[in-house]
Length: 372
Image (cartoon, rainbow, N blue to C red; front, side, top):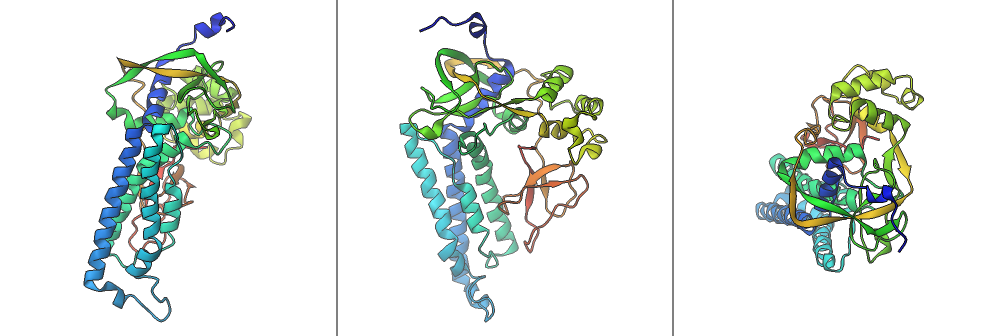
C-alpha cells in the first residue's frame, strides 16, 4: 500500500464532525429503528381500538349516504387504509431483521402517509383524530431522520451542515457525552462506490464536507457526493466562526447584511425580509451556500468504551419549530406537516399557517431541516 501523505496523516475529526458522526450512527442504529417500530406498534394498537369502538357503537350506519356511499365509514378505512398501516409495520420488522445482514433502506413511511391521507377519518371523533395524528407524528419523528440518513436515491448526501445543526438541537439532550472516534486511513472509498465497511465516512480532502453514512454489501449503500460550502459559505465560516455558525443569529444577520449584494443572495426571493429579522438570517444563508464535492472518503470508527464531553457552545443549536395550523408563523422558512404528504412550503413570518382540509385544524407544521 502506498505511503500516506503528511496531509492525510494529520487529518482528524473536529468536535463538530464528531457530533455529526454521533448523530449519523444514532439515526442508522438498530435501536433507533426499533424505536420507530415501537411507535408504529403503538399507533396500530390505538387505531385498532378506535375501529373496534366504532363497530361496537355502530357508527357506520349513520355515515353512509346516497352521495358519498361508504366513503366516511370505518369499514372503508379498514378495507383501504388499514392495510397500508400493517404493511409499514411488516416492512419495519423486516428491516430490523435485515440489519443482521447489514442491509439498510429508507422506511417507507412517506408511502404510508400519502396513502392514509386519501381516506376519510370522519368516522372518528375530533379527539380520536387528534390522537391518531399525534401518534402518526411520533412515527414520523423517527422516519424522517432514518430516511435522511439512508436515502441513496439522489446524487448528493441528504444532510447539510445546517440540517445537522438543526437535528442536533433535537437530540443534544440525549447525549451527555459522545463516543471517541478514529479515522481509519486504511479503509477508503470513492464517491459513487460501495464502501469496504458499513459506517460513517469523512471526506479525505474537504474538512467542511458533511459526514455521511454508507454501507457495505449492496450497491444501494454507495457513498454520494459530499455536501459542502460554496465561496459564500466559506466566507460565513470565516467571518462568523465555526462555533457560532447557524447558532448566533446576530452574527448571521450581520453577515447577511454585509454580503447582501452578493449575487448568491440577491436572487433569493426572501432577501429583503430576511435582512430585517435575525431569526431569518441563518436559513437565508443556508439556502444559498451549498455545494457538491466529489472526493474519496475515510471510514470513521467508533472507539468502544471511550467517550468525551461535549463543548457547551456546540450544543446550543437553534431549536426546531412546531406551529399548529391556524396560528401565525413565528419564523419565515420552509415547513411541512405529517398531516399532508407533499405539504412542504415556504411561509413568511406572521402568515397564518393553514389548517388544511381537516375539520378540526389538527395539522402541526414543522420546521424543515432542509431550508434549501
